[in-house]
Image (cartoon, rainbow, N blue to C red; front, top):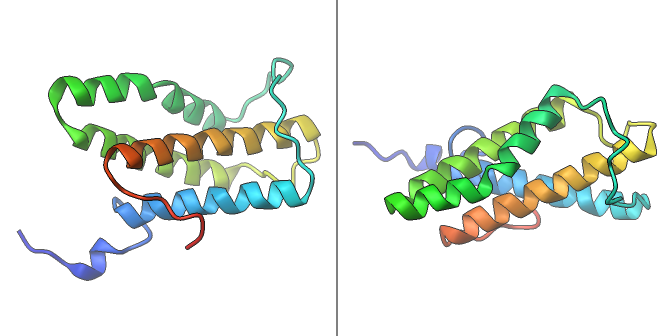
Length: 138
């Protein structure tokens, strides 16, 4: 096995820095939302037309408890690491494909900010279980 130090700090691909960068990106989005006065509403029951990447991200976030249980059952932290990577990858696809601040519907905008916040929470908690800190900025 060869260790390549340049690959270990890449901000893209299957790396810790990629996951940390995703968290930092979401932190930036949350700061921007606060500055713009976007309120993270809690009732999104009237939203009916989710984008595919939003639905995918929600499904992944809903699976967090099962992932942690599987990691505990198998004594495999790699399960949590893979989950964090998969969530970060899905979030970045969502971020690329779905407008957050360009959205004109205030409820959709608030939903996307809230979805971003929940994603950040899942990433932070997952990496915390692995003893990895998450930076607010990179």
